Length: 113
Image 1 (cartoon, rainbow, N blue to C red):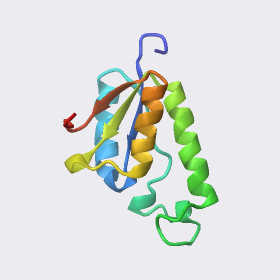
Image 2: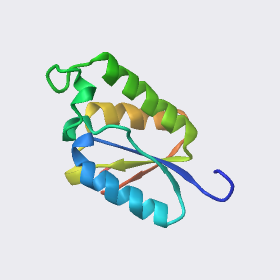
Image 3: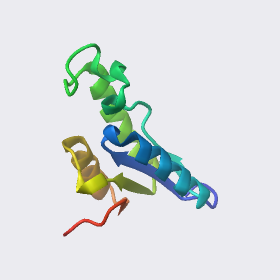
Image 4: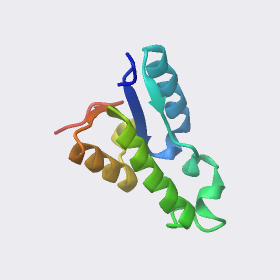
């Protein structure tokens, strides 16, 4: 918490850019401080891939993945944007990191346990 505001970090595939923006707006209007991604690599921000094939583990991608873990460190909770139940490898790793660090986890769509 920062003052009276819960801090929420958004996690999920960057192919869901529209959902990220919608959820960010909704959570902000509910009184949360929202931390999101800085680039949408799967939605056109090609700088992530350093002119290589999408999905290549570039220096920029490694930095962004590490930076996102630091964003989780700053948060009280993560909110997973799992459209149609989709959770990719990077997001799975962020969920595990959040669990290991005692963060609350919420999902856009219910998941089966």
